[in-house]
Every structure is written in structure tokens, then in C-alpha cells.
Length: 421
Image 1 (tube, rainbow, N blue to C red):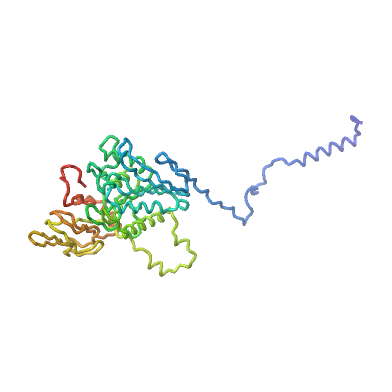
Image 2: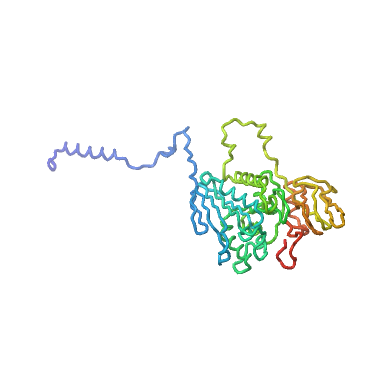
């Protein structure tokens, strides 16, 4: 006996303990060539999970938070008590439920250009934030001073679109420009600024942009069949200042001041809707149609490629009198073709204005009384995008009239600094 156990019992107990030890599941290295347990069997693909959607956070702007999938109308006033006696500028923010760029739409920098006011109002309130990828910030009236008075200018006759990005310590125009630039424009990823012709002039709907800037050039490709005109712009313009800080920006010209023109407004609204589809901010309604696609009808309805007008020039009246046009906006003309005539009502003498080059009328003056030297017709020469970019990059002599001219029959003295391009 051993501790109460016989030799046979002790041997049996020791054998049972040895068998239990051998049966334990100890971690061991897998045999050479064996596959890890996590690898799916041959012939079964590993499932690919879709990437998690990007988290959309509320947008902080003008001391408010705009949550995704909502629209909020805010108010903007320049600081320093500049506009306490004026109505505030409305700022409509549609924060999309999905991630995307921030597109800013501005108008009313010139208070009498009301086509843009309606364009931005319509777009800002029609977009559905629950189906929007990105954000639309719409400011239909930037210059409330001029808008409330039906004037292009601020009360001191300064042109607000010559003072961006502005300064906190400059003139009233510079302070308003600085406040708007810091409070609104700095939130943008891209910007479209709406204008019309100046002083009883009308512009064919067109995008004006610096085509030497690659980001701006790419931006212009989203406006469908809208005319694109290369223009460096003037110092102090909103689009020039925005582009300088890395925010691609263009000017969208449409129609004439002091009036609402339904056709021009509708064309501009359609162009921005196409732009938003190009930026993947909204869905193409035709892409979700379940009906079969008719290739022939699609080819017929597709917009033609956007013509780009690089070389443009204003044709001036060489005499004073009553201007009567013989062409219409958008019309193609030949060199030497009569654009209009100026009639001296005192001497009853007519003098003709002829086209110096072939082209298309992209801007023109309304019939009115004019003085000698008045810019009456804006002609554009069509070219390809590649040629436009190449020639835009080459040094060019300064244009006789850049953008829309400031001169008018009753123009102020050029020495007062208020009217300059």
C-alpha cells in the first residue's frame, strides 16, 4: 500500500493524469504551408464593405449653427455700426445632408442690378437640403445701401466691387467689403457673383473668368452652353479677391440693370443647376428615370459645347446724339456691318457705328442719348478653349474698356475717383 493506495491503483491514477495532460489544447505553431484560420476557403471572395459616409457637421456662420439637411435664413450687417439704419443683408444657408463643397452665390453688389437678386433668391430657396451634397450660401443683396435707393453705388458714390477684400480701417466701402469677405466669403469653396450690364447696357448671359488660373478654368466647364469670356478682372472685384485667396470665382453677367428679365433669369438659374450637377451636389433628374433612353433624342437635346470668347472689344460712338441700334443681343455680325446709328436731333445728321471686326454682340447699350466716346456695343470673337487659355497667358496690351465701362451720358467727373474701371 502507498498512502492508502495499492500499486495497481497508483499506476492507474498516474496514467489518467498523463492522458489528461496530453489532451490539453495548448497553442502550437501551425504546420508549414497551412493557411491562417481567418482566410476564407478557396473560391469564396472576401466581402467588400462600402466606405462609411463622411460625417457632415453643422456649419458655423454668422454666430449660428446650420445643421445638415436644413435651410436657415440669417442676417448680415457690417461691423462698426455702418448699416444700423439699413435693412440687413439676407443670407440663406442650405446645409446639405451629405458631404460636398460650399458654393456661394452673391448678387446686388451693384444695387441697381436686380436680375441677380432674383436669380440668387430663386436658387437659394429652391434647393432641397435633404438631397443636397454640400452647402449653398446665397446672398441676394450685398449692397443694401444701393439696393434701397436703386443705385449702383454706395452713398458716397463708391463702387463696392472695387474694394474687395477691403480693410477694417479704410473708407466705408473698404470696411463693408472687408466685413463681407471675412464673414461670408471665407466660408466658400467656390463663388459665383451675379451682375448685369451697367448704365442702360445689356449683357448676353455670360461667365467672365480668368482662364489662366487652372482651378477657375475647370470651374467654368460646369456652366453648360453658357458663353465664357476670358477677363483678368479689375483690382478690387470680388471674384479677383476671392480667387487670390484660393477660392475659384467667376462673374455671371445677365441682362440689363433696373429691370427684371425672365428669360435671362431662367437661363442663369439653369446654368447654376447644371453647375451643381457637375459638382455632384445634386442628382441629375434624368439619371434616375426608369424609362428607356432614346439615344437619338439625347443627342438632339444635349447642349452644344460652351463657346469661349477671348478677344472682345467695345465699340464707341464717335458723336453725340440719339443712339438707335440696328442689331440685337447675341447676333453675329460681319466686319463693316452697321451696328447702329447716332442721330443729332439739332442738325438732323445721322452717323453710323460699324463693326470693326467680325464677331457676336455680347453686350450693347439700350437706345438712349449718348455723348461722344460712349461705349455702345461689345463684340466677342469666338475661339477654342485651348486657344483662349494660350492667348490669355500671353502678355496683352491693356484693353480700352475692361469689364463693363463706367462711362455714361451723365457720368461724374473722372477726377473724383468714383467712376473708374
